[in-house]
Length: 558
Image 1 (cartoon, rainbow, N blue to C red):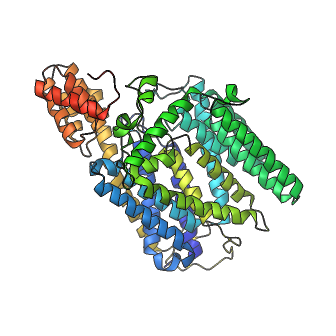
Image 2: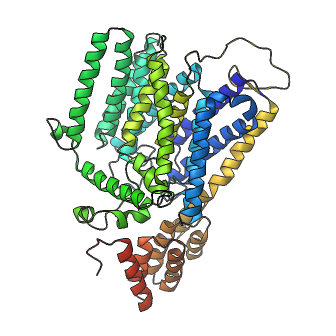
Image 3: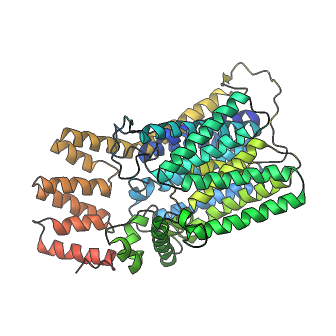
């Protein structure tokens, strides 16, 4: 077995690389979905590498102090498995998740391993590395966002939003990541020991990030940065140990926060600056998700199955507000998403992780010494939680949230590994730091990475084949892509529509019938079947009845 400090440092290095790569990797010229599938691969590979190291060294590294975290991790995996088995939704779909989200069983199992990696790797040197990595990711995203804003993007994204979508495919996600990166830069900027050149670079990164967040047509990044800045300011004020100043600061911030919340709800003096129509739409998504959870309290509607159930559980007001064809495949609230997709037990377990982290934050506020990088970790974490109330568990953001949660849970008042130089055995493989990794652990790490790659690669390969077939306009390649495993309803529907437009209705009907058989709650597949001219009348009547059942408030359905 490898020494505790050595393994923790190795896990920390894997974790940092995982965070950076998952945040910025995209495949626009290779796959139909250029964002989420490759991020799932990156996440799974790194997480399985961490998991393999933890499993192989479990006896020597999982101490009693990790008991609550391990218990919650086991409960989360058990609940995910129960939902996977008993929700009645296609298991392959639940395993990889829906197109454009991919937050299924594989994703959440990987995020649990990321959290555990954060707990075990938690140490002062890692806090600095994580903050520096987030500054790097934020700076790269800001520069690319600036390129997009100037209209010089070399990638021709099929994008209906603001051109500023970064590496996450959506201005809201891009804005939030920029806000988190700006908080990390601010944490370095206010650190008295930071070199002048580094401070200047961080200041420039903050200014560019906030500018790009501002022009992305999304307020999320500015909100995240404001909350994180307040958190850092609180730690600064508290360090003065003057009760009156601390109390006044908290009172002012609490009152300002209350006014801000009212403003987002179109009330109070800040309403004209903070309110957006999207807040109302999010309310529709939240209510639908909550209704799903109430109707399916133990197992939810199935992992990543919000989209197939949204029409059924939305209110009539939501249906009429923007028209029946405006739908969503996520609740735009991470907490409600957990309850809707996996039941209240899944939500409770996730809250358990956050409570463990919140307890460590509370303990830190009472500690005698300060760690400015750890304060940066806390500030970014709180900013992430704030955006998760109004946003989606996008993989490029979620990986930071789960890693930061683990780092905070793993904090201890005297946490610092010895920097003593130790003579390394000749059988060790030298790492790029002060730690070493034995040949066995090196092999374990590589095995975990390979298993993660094998497990997560199929959807990426299928998406690549689909893009290749579409580009070549070859029918056989397109049909072959539709049959690829894992089968995806969205891909099948898209190909069916193409076949219909090319007068190949027989093939289209075959595909759509297969789709509704495997995914009976997929509204779009039933709709396509009902609209194909050569569909049998019995099939059309069945399709329309299913559409009515799945979308009861749709006034366009007679």
